[in-house]
Length: 248
Image 1 (cartoon, rainbow, N blue to C red):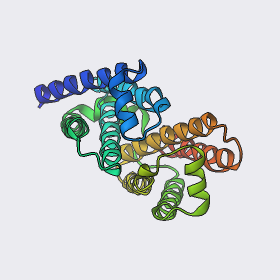
Image 2: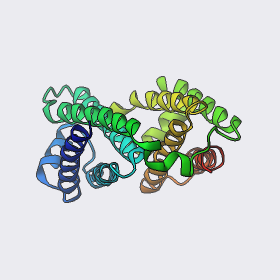
Image 3: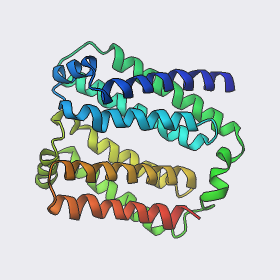
Image 4: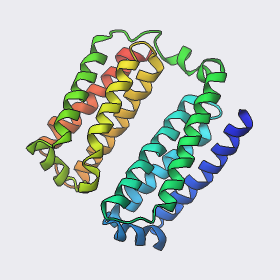
């Protein structure tokens, strides 16, 4: 299993590094694809190129700290699900790269999880930093309920949510994905009541999500209610749950 894990991690790391270089340098290949998929070209550097770069670093750290590798691989799974959705939205059936990336990301996630299960305590991360059980537990439940309610409002976006998506320039193709992100977060938080490192990883992913949301609002010069009441308050709440309920 170690050989399979290291082989797939190496392949995924090389692919991630290539994606980071191509997007961060504005190469014609991703630029052409962005135009075909109606994705804003300014997204090539951030968040797309930055996501590739962070994922590359996470995969490299994975052999030493498997929990980080799991987060990086899971992030790439989400990334390529969104990429496939972007192709389908415009009726583009040239799904080779996106599908290949998704298969590689899924395989990497599976073998990373199996590798982590065979290690002592996920490289020591759980025993060193994560509580045996969430304490206090009620903020975790509260955040899970909020994510579930948010998911319900995103399935057919409420007016203020649709306005928020529009203000930050989120492509309409990605709108149907957002409720499932919230549903997955709810499931991870609830699972974290019994398996704390899963809840801690979910909380950390939510922190990253809302950091990106805050950046998107600032980039769009949307510094009103959407930024302060929605993105910033959610970020503070997720940081609080991660810090006070899951981490020692």
